[in-house]
Length: 163
Image 1 (tube, one colour):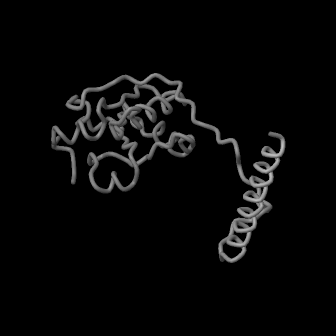
Image 2 (cartoon, one colour):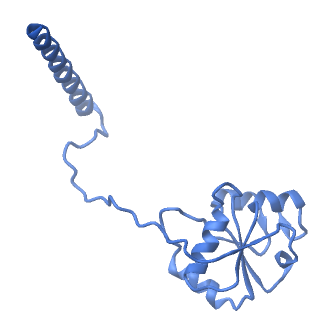
């Protein structure tokens, strides 16, 4: 029994050494091989934005969406924003790992808008709701998000939407 275990251990060691030699050889031949020693520092901890503010849910057919005094934000990505968005909306893509830039928060605060309305992708969790909570957590008041996000708004085909 003892000799059999040694044979298995020897065979496993041979496989590990063989795979290592093949991997190192392949890595050496590649133009963009993976460095064996990291030369540049890289960030291993990424701060997540705190979504600790309160945001009120809003129906996709709420009249406030047509209010010219409302500051409307599209929390989807640039590609989705380019395909469709409400006419007055600005593009502020929500990132789950990176906080919203201070200049965006300042722009919202300086707008003098009565309400801030955010709509997102409508998924669960909804990027619009998450961005609305983050904005509210940074001190902006009267922040709302559209339940169901852009898909719910598009289903109603509001007059303020552009293709």
